[in-house]
Image 1: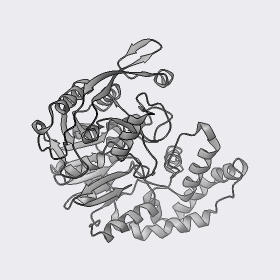
Image 2: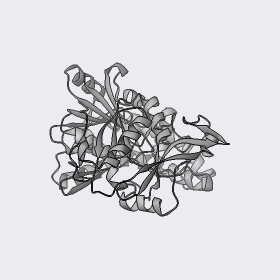
Image 3: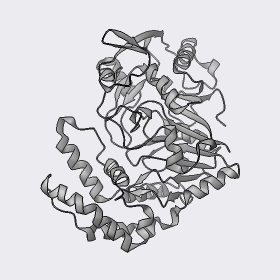
Image 4: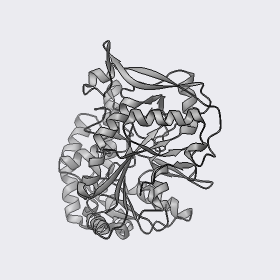
Amino acid sequence: MPALVLLGAQWGDEGKGKATDLLGGSVDYVVRYQGGNNAGHTVVVGDQKYALHLLPSGILSPGCTPVIGNGVVVDPSVLLSELSGLNERGVDTSKLLISGNAHIITPYNVTVDKVTERFLGKRKIGTTGRGIGPTYADKINRVGIRVQDLYDESILTQKVEAALDVKNQMLTKLYNRRAIAVGQVVEELLDYADKLAPYVADTVLVLNQALEQDKVVLFEGGQGTLLDIDHGTYPFVTSSNPTAGGACTGAGVGPTKISRVIGILKAYTTRVGAGPFPTELFDEDGEALRRIGGERGVTTGRDRRCGWFDAVIARYATRVNGLTDFFLTKLDVLTGWEQIPVCVAYEIDGRRVEELPYSQTDFHHAKPVYEMLPGWNEDISKAKSFSDLPKNAQAYVKALEEMSGAPISAIGVGPGRTETIEINSFL
């Protein structure tokens, strides 16, 4: 039962799409198990660049079945637009499967997300305004709309009415907005039913049967470990569980079926949105990382905050996810620095702390303790093996591996599909 989980080991945007796409040709199923269209992946195939927001990266690999699991929240308009865009570029999307238990992002979820964030003002979380958080809130409050509800108009209407009973009160009395009509929402959602019908399936059954048949299944998380609703930098997090445990609940497979957990690490650190970030840079180095690394959100278009590599976070990700391997991405971006700082610990109120503090207050006040590693000037984008890398680049990778607590089994040396050094096979 070769089931692999692949997830972000920082705050997201680590290059999961590249890693998933690299494995996609060797796996039978690629499964998104959480998140929504607030998580974007950029995948470069030859001279073609694909920006995926909701679809699993495996959709670009012929012979691979892409799956949107029950833990994902789906905006039908975004999904259909993304499918249409890929079809126009000659990508076959017919094998996509969508869980009937996945929740739908409704128009009122998007409205609530936007007005709530504006209302918070300087206390805002930094959401993408795409309705993801309110949709997960509806799910937990048991007033959510699932994909399967699109095929029973009576049930759909009852559920929309129940959801809007409270939301319209909030919109009109608290936010001074116009009430949303039940009929309008139902009509819009029903319009998606026939268009989504070819893809809807019992994905829990499909995936478990595939594993019983020794098919290779790759579970792909959106966002990253430090954005996990339970284990991230709360409240500046997403509304689901991108950590490894989320793969089990978000896809409907048992933990005993997971054979490997791969964490994606960027050779430096970035994050989008508000929240603490100990190694964040506000100088020329930070701007250089942003420019050279092309650090702009695939989905949001926002500039990413940039900083040096944080080994404390990497160790935390190893522990929380039970990581068996790392995929280190964007090593090429660091070419040209004479010395490269790496955060090995924090200083908090005069104390040296080597593990992530559980207290939000302590983490907010954490100052990075750096170790300086020698840099390199050689172009590494053509490197095909670890020995092809400059000695200082090799030493940098080995140092990060030792600090992070799991072996680095692959290294990204450029954005292209083939610009990867594979040290140990993931399969």
